[in-house]
Image (cartoon, rainbow, N blue to C red; front, side, top):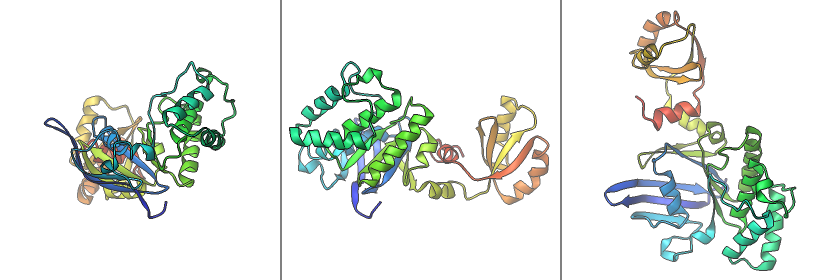
Length: 307
């Protein structure tokens, strides 16, 4: 990433009647940055992205995307961005070429430019199936790669990826993220939403949304340090815990944070004194080891707002 700002939101507000979906959100994203945008359903992520894609004017505030804003005309921002949704949006009963031809016609791309650009994009995604392949014949991961190619066809400066690997195999997700990194290295700004915390780890910075507000923004390491100034521990039950006992530990005075993590628990002490007092007793129930916090821990603490 360089220091050039490509996406900017200043005091962004979106209201639907009396409901405020986005509430005074401010951030910037640089050229070549992979920027994660995370939050629970209903947090305001999709509404913010709609504004940044040029399809929903803000109620208040200002946005600039690749140097353009709503004041520059209805389609000014749209020409600068590409968008790929979480659901594959191309036509299954058409070939790859027919799908890309259709997108090119919607974008009113010059024929010679389109042919050249299509070849560049197919090389970028390492597409080997051939333009005559029907979309329904492709694997889920390859379909998403073609969908990304369609979003990049008009050479946008910013590409928005809305949960791009939902339903894709782990191997397919890994290949797709290698492709995302190549896109960013080419100078594109990549704006990603995902529910996979291992994918979020690959973002340069992450913004966390909750109830329409931006609650934190930093690198993955910076978010972990901010969310957990305390030491974090993993608790492995010596015997299976009942739900009532688990709930009791979540409300225990020893803990500032105590959450399930698979068959184990991640926890942070309320304070040093409480930890020294309670640890011997807790070790009768758990095997305890020191760990680093995960982004999932950060998400639970900062977005789901458990005290």
